[in-house]
Amino acid sequence: MDELADLLSRHPVIDGHNDLLWEARKQVGYDFDRLDIAGSVASTHTDLPRLAAGGVGGQFWSVYVPCSLTGGHAVAATLEQIDAAYTMIERYADRLAFAGTADEVEAAWASGRIASLLGAEGGHSIDCSLGALRMLYAVGVRYLTLTHNDNTPWADSATDEPAVGGLSSFGVEVVREMNRIGMMVDLSHVAPDTMRAALATTDAPVIFSHSSARAVVDHPRNVPDDVLASLPDNGGVCMVTFVPAFVNPEVAAWQAELVAAARAAGVARDDDDGETAFKLEWSRDRPRPSATLEDVVTHVEHVRAVAGIDSVGLGGDYDGVDGLPVGLEDVSSYPRLLAALADRGWSQSDLAQLTSGNLLRVMRGVESVSAKLRSERGPSLATIEELDGSAPT
Image (spheres, helix red, strand yellow):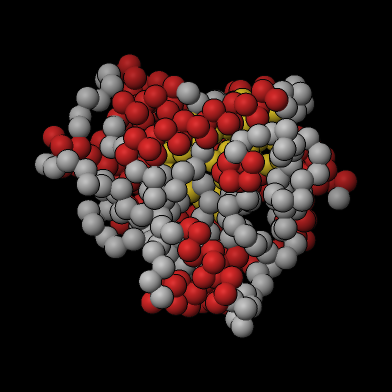
């Protein structure tokens, strides 16, 4: 463990996705007097002491809003999430530092603080507006997940019925504009055809901020092998997630049965409260199976085997799920995962790439592409009506 502690002091974890801000909204309306993460917090997976214990040196805080919020309501709620992020970072400025570039991540480390980055989870947050996309970048958002659980008018989600065959013409323009401004294209949550279309379009490396391997667990949120195999050519990274239904086949089957039963009972997909209540009742006689740390190890090793050591990272999805694998219960758990990988022959160099080396390389690649494209073209003024022939619905 001394070797792991030394590794994490030099190469801290940069985690791709954490939903603490939405939990703060739900639990206390963003009141960090009531949800004070300076000490131990029983109601979340995340607080500052556990981040330190986990060797986390960089965290992408998700500025998530649900798909039930649409149009300007989604944009406003996303801005409220960003505002909460800045409030949190300022309140705990002795331990958190905003970062928007790879150099700023390393500057945060040099000051002994956790680099705090922002990622928007779902293209509905821009309301089909490239201007809104640019403004999210201007206020610090450094990745956009192209969809969440529902399609956008310009991109197909992994968990919705296909509508545009991956990316529409406007969706292609979104990716091109993200490349130009320097925002990472996040392909978690999107359909496989959307993944492939984005990879065919992008000039910059992509990320999967919190996804695992579909060949190991056949869940729609996971990444097929042909897409993983394309990451070396792109330079991108798949940040393996810990969501039990994505990493363990028994949990995936249990979840699929639950969802089918909820739909049969008339519970809508975007009815979060209804789904929670239905799950509580339905699961009384059907306890959820357990996932384990070893399940996550299997996914990490599979991504490495298919995509290579340069294309794997970590995106736990803490505070975005109501349960986690045994051994990975909160953000203090990363050293246990690294120890398990070391026991399976991962070198210190391998682990350093997994924790943060690969993601920092991707960030620098995105920044470099942006500098080139900004010198070649100005902001896109395209609209979805012009490119796709109809207004969004």
